[in-house]
Image 1 (cartoon, rainbow, N blue to C red):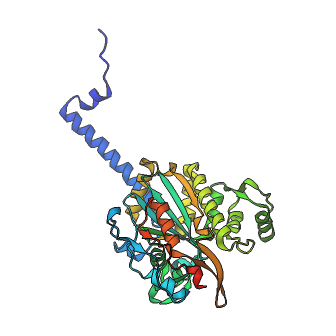
Image 2 (cartoon, rainbow, N blue to C red):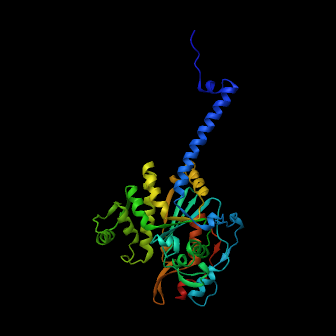
Image 3 (cartoon, rainbow, N blue to C red):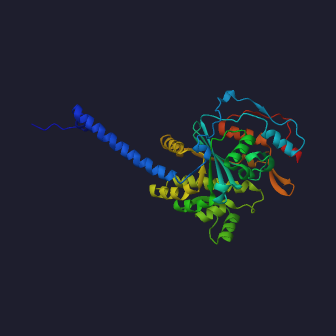
Length: 373
C-alpha cells in the first residue's frame, strides 16, 4: 500500500491543535521579519532632518477640492508698475489648484549643509509632480532669479525667488511659489547638493547629453577630462559642476535648470537599476543631508505605494515652457539682473501641465508684466 502524500495544507491544518500552533509560528515569524525590516528602515530614516511642522503633525493640510469646485480667477487688470503687478497677483487670494490624483513635492537644492539648519538661498527649485491618473512624473524648474513679492518669514519685500528660502526656510519658499503659480504643494525635500557627489558615485554615475561648451567648462573648472556627446557618463563631481554651470549660456537660468532636470532624471534612472547594496550606500550618504516635512510613516507609505503601484515605471517628463519668450524676460531691477515672469500665463501653463485643467482665465486685453518694464 502506497503512502499517501501529505500536502503543505494537510500538514498545516490536519488538526485544530496543530493548526493553532502553526498559525502562531508563522505569525510570529512574520512579525519578527517585519520588525527587522521596519527597524532597518527606521534606522535609515533617523538620519533625516524632519521639519518641526512634520514632527508636530502640521504638514501641508490644504483642502483638496473637487476640481469643478475651484473658483475661477482673473489676471491683473490694473497695475501701476512691475512691483504692483507681482504683488497683486501673489495676494489675489485665488484658490490653489489641487487634485487627489496628484502629489507635488518641492525639491530644494542648497549650496551648503548649513543652509539646511540655518537657512540660505536655494540654488535649485524643482517641482516633482506625480500624477497617478496619467501615470507621469512631471519635472518643472522655477527660476531662482524670478522677481517676485514674498512675505516669507515675516519679511514683506520684493526679491529674487530664491531669497524666500533665506527669509522663511522651505515653508516660506513654498508659500511664495504657491501664491505665484497657484498650485498646492504637498511636501518639500531640501538637499545639500554637495551630497550628490557621493550619491552619484555610489550609483556608478549618471548619463546625460553634454555639449561642447559644457564639456569645456567641466574640464576647465574641475581638472577632469570628458568628451562631449549625446550619452556621457559623469562622475559625482562632474555632474555637480555640470548642474551648476551658470555664466556660459546666453539664456540666463534656462540652460542651468535644463541641466539640473537632466541630472535628476538620470539619477532616477540610475536608481532603478541599482543593487540593494548600492541603494544602502546611497541612503547612508544622502539622508543625513536631507530635510523634509514628510513624516517617517508617510515615507514608508509612499515607498510601499511606489512599489505596489509601479510609480517608478511612470514616464518622466521635463518641461521647459517657463523658458518660452511669452512667459519670461531677463531685465534689470536696480543693479540686479533678474528674470521677469508673466505669472498669470506661467501659472496657467503650470496648472494645465500638472492637472490637465486650469482655474485661471486670461483676458486678451489683460496687463502683461513686460508692459511694465
